[in-house]
Image (cartoon, helix red, strand yellow):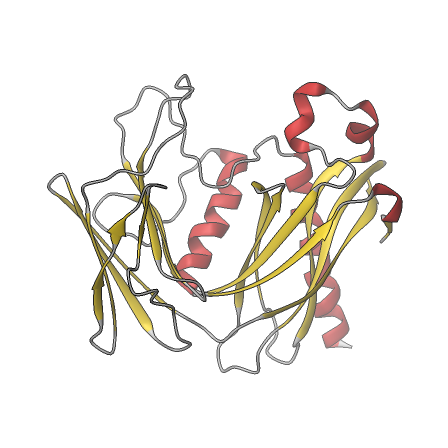
Length: 282
């Protein structure tokens, strides 16, 4: 009986989190728009199943219509706990990338060192055992008289000594759309389902031009990713998720005064297409 109670509590938390995302007007995942403050550095670094990359930007004012670009001129070095070290190379897309195509390995701890304009930022992250993304499906959920559309996804936790933590990212036609962060609550549960809020039936029917970024349209291309992250990266993304509601700063794992994250993680992905007539009640 206790297992069923734990499972229901976990499902209820997912529903509440999904509702909060639907009701939130914030749609950008990693934009730091602070008005009338001294600009600060934002670092976003990834060592994953794809070659390592790091993006360095500066914050901008809300009134600035120009989107932040990756900053050149930094010394960006990644190393691991086995003594391997590599300096990343700046590219035309604004990212610093591994020239050798260095990818992460389960159980390895990676460190990041960034030097730019006399500043130095450091971070570390450990790649945990992979959580597998099994399938995704759009569903309707009615709560408090509101019919909401959510993306439901199923995933499988590894049989590991440490409880798993995940970060789910959703893209619409190549642009970031939604995200949610979660964790395994019981080491005896390996199969799990989670949801991320997308929009409401009312908004879809109204088709307000000002809401177009929040809406889904027939045949939109949907790409989703499930990252297996460590505790420090979980703290960052979860605090970012909560901070959207109370305007607080996220808990970064980067030292030296920069915001952002450095994460070593596995990535599972699925591509699908949105078709409203295929969406069923949860």
